[in-house]
Length: 229
Image (cartoon, rainbow, N blue to C red; front, side, top):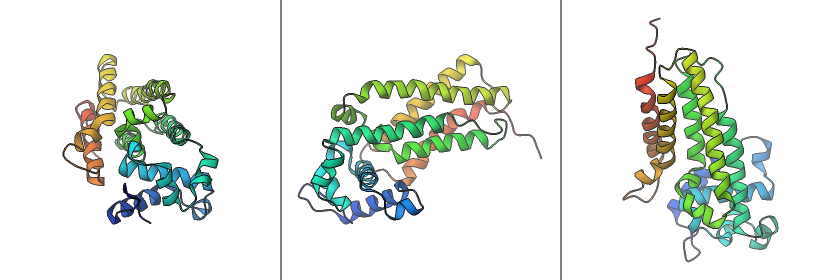
C-alpha cells in the first residue's frame, strides 16, 4: 500500500509509515483480519492523518488507501467532518479510560511510570489530534467545546491518580504544587510534537520517547526515594 501525494501517487516512505500505523491501529484478533468497512476507514484515516496531517489528506486519498470507492466511504462519512468527529470520539473514549485507570498499588515504584507511559502511548497513537488541533477544529468546529471538556475531565481524573500516589507516599508534593505539576505535564504532553517538528518533516519513535522523557522528568523531583531491598 502507498499513500498519495498531491498528484495521487503514494511515496514509498509514506506508504511504509502508514502501514506501520495500521499495524498498531488495528487491534489483533479475528476483527483485525477482516475489519468492517467503517472500522477500516477509521483506521486508515488515523494512519494517514498521523503521517501527513489532518489538513493534508482528502477523502479520495483515504478511500484509495483503504481500497474502496470514494462513494463507499461517503456512505459511512458523507463529509470529512464526520470522519474527524468519529476519530475524536474514539480518542475521547480511550482518553477517559486511560486517565482514570487507577494503579492497583499507587505506592509501587513502577505504578506512576506505567500510568504516564499509557497516557503517552495514547497521545502517540492519536498524535494528529495534538499536532493538528487547529486544523481539527477548523474541519469540525463542534469539537472545540469537546476538546476543552475532555481536557478538564482527564486532568481531574489524573489528579485523582496522583493524589492517590501522594496518600500512598510515592509522591511528595503539596496540593497547590500538584496542580501546577499536572498543568505543566499537560502543556508538555500537548505541545512536544510541535517542538520536535521544528525543522523536520516527520515524527519518529525516537521523538516519542524524547517527549515521554520530558513528562517523566517533571515528576522526578517529587518522587519518594525507593526503599532498599
